[in-house]
Length: 394
Image 1 (tube, rainbow, N blue to C red):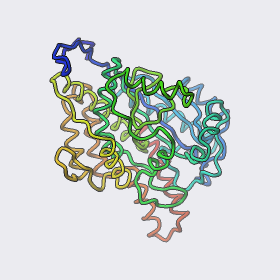
Image 2 (image 1 turned 120 degrees about the horizontal axis):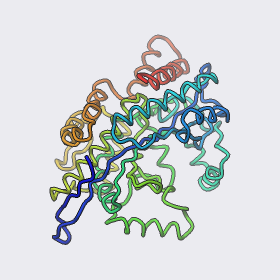
Image 3 (image 1 turned 30 degrees about the vertical axis):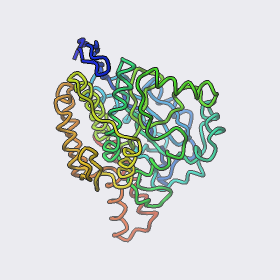
Image 4 (image 1 turned 180 degrees about the vertical axis):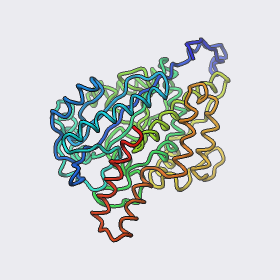
């Protein structure tokens, strides 16, 4: 891909604007639950020695999370999707192996099928103590795991421009990722209950549309100067410019149980950004829609996953998610070929064919009930299936 200098016609000024192609390097952060292998419930506390042992294997790539029964990993910066798959697979494998030595397992799902949030403890670190003090009950209830995908877009104004446009596709990515149908032992009827839990925090949901980097910072500075937040890391939007890296960070999806599903979500996000950049060079833009309309699609994605429809705002009609995914794959095909991620992008069709993690969890649960298991036994079978799928193919 290189760093070729490209030119596009400015719509506002009618002049040629020099654009550096983004590097589109990529990284993933994932959060996992730690479960007791005997009870299948969350462990009450993560031993400090477990974290130290993980650090010895993958230094700088593992950290505690807000809840003591969670652990987070972050890949190094990857040049391409296949390198990212290698990094993420190694991290999952390493953390799972260490956890096994303690009679524990990791599960990659956005909610635990039956854990009680009221019994959890938060990590005793200054950052988390401040969060607990500021947010009280809503953050204590935050027993959810997520996946964050960072894609490098070095130009700050371009980062904002692409954020404004790619927001349209966040409901489609959420639908493909759903992994949180249960909450405290109850089938919620939603494929992504994580989204509902997370929305109880302030500064979540969709961002505003900003005219550029300076406009974005003017808004953030109001909150910082008022003493409401320390910096942009306290913005928990579904997508945001990272405050630590020159990246656009996608945070809208559930965490995928199957590692290859997660890589597909990352590949789609990267390819969509590449497609939008390519269209900009051709003097084209993806039409932006109001947060109200995009939020309606997000609701449909969290409620139904891939089993129903999303609104195609260009046509003004509901379209089945499988059809929309087919359209997206074709839309980004040229970019996926250039990025070396076509195989991973096309894996989205496999997700459609066999269902998301949420679909699979519900299938296990109802099959267990049909065999005569009680609800608790059926939920334990769901945890067993999650344990197995989290490390499948590593």
